[in-house]
Length: 185
Image 1 (cartoon, helix red, strand yellow):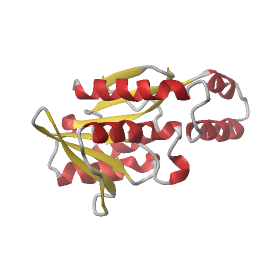
Image 2 (tube, helix red, strand yellow; image 1 turned 90 degrees about the vertical axis):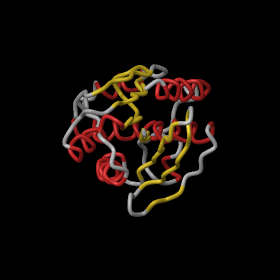
Image 3 (cartoon, one colour; image 1 turned 180 degrees about the vertical axis):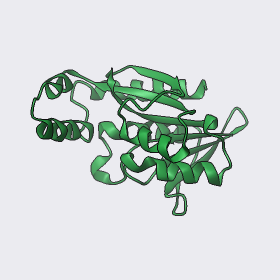
Image 4 (tube, helix red, strand yellow; image 1 turned 45 degrees about the horizontal axis):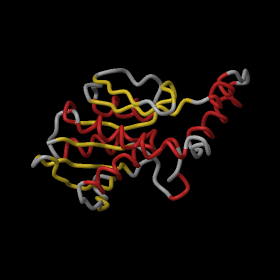
């Protein structure tokens, strides 16, 4: 069995944000395979069970904030008795250009707080990651800010902000590409 976990922040105000791209990919897979999410309070996640090529697959959306994803991921893995290598984590990545998707296994967090939280909770980085690029020219400007506090504030606004008008038409293809790469694992 596989467990596919999309990272994002709970709440309506974050629905269209860059940080919630993981949720959107998992929602896409859920819709494509006729699943239905239910909130499991013990696991602190919305969970859906689907079948892909007669294989049982669990989809999950942790209802913690991204930076605390490890809490929910650990509960999910333990509850379903899954090894970390059966996990696929889908998340945004500020180092990859918008429109690109990369797959990695057993890599470090590269500064992604949600991934750091998962590695710390599981005590391993041996899981798959679908890294969806959110880098754009706005981020170049933010990274040039000298004042650390202002830079962090602008970075946070960027991450929880919506995709730009020029990015929005390309989102559906990006989500579909990420879903296809997920299914190849």
